[in-house]
Image 1 (cartoon, rainbow, N blue to C red):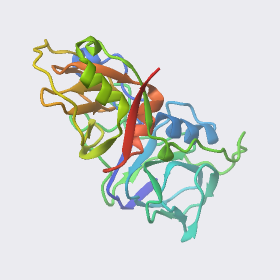
Image 2: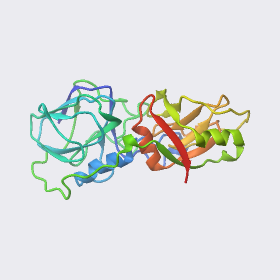
Image 3: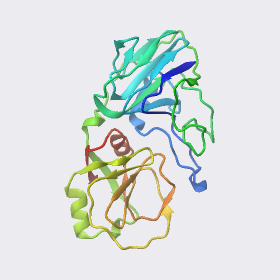
Image 4: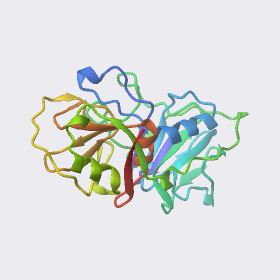
Length: 279
């Protein structure tokens, strides 16, 4: 059992998400930075769908009540095991009574804690991902307990990996969205020639960008959206849907982020810069 002594800012259990449910209005959910989460599970020889702890901005304090192995990837939040600094992207042996804590955020925005065989929270519609309309909680809470398997012996295939520095990347590769054709020359010029900064309105549902481009007066029927869909509001605001984003929307869908671009964006915080490039 994993005991949460202090929950941190916003930490959630996530896996690959809920598939084939969007027609019923259920978002995909799942890990925001799929690359980092997959690397954490790969280090532990876990299945790709194994549930991890997604940690946003500030980390929790966690007490382990059984032996296991862990890996931390994504943002560097100055992790400490029993008060001793430990590195990301490597395997750490855990013994009963060990305490994992986090300190200053050094880079990135979201870290991923994987545990051998994954966290064993309840399955809801085929996924362990937290999403409050479906699951009792939208984040972990102080003093709660999370189940995991006791593992005392494990011979990993990899001891560590060299990560891609997503926190340093700012270029978001995109494809043309269904309503890309509505964009005029001035809108296109601004969209691809400038850098944008992340607004304070950013979470697992969507990221908004601070700067705007000329808006539109188009009336559209509500249409299907996906994680990574970039919407343009009538006032010229850009909204980039993320993993908990709604399944339909009425704004023009002008661009679609690549999966890697979603991972890059998920590691950005307020004021960080991004730009768009067609591929």
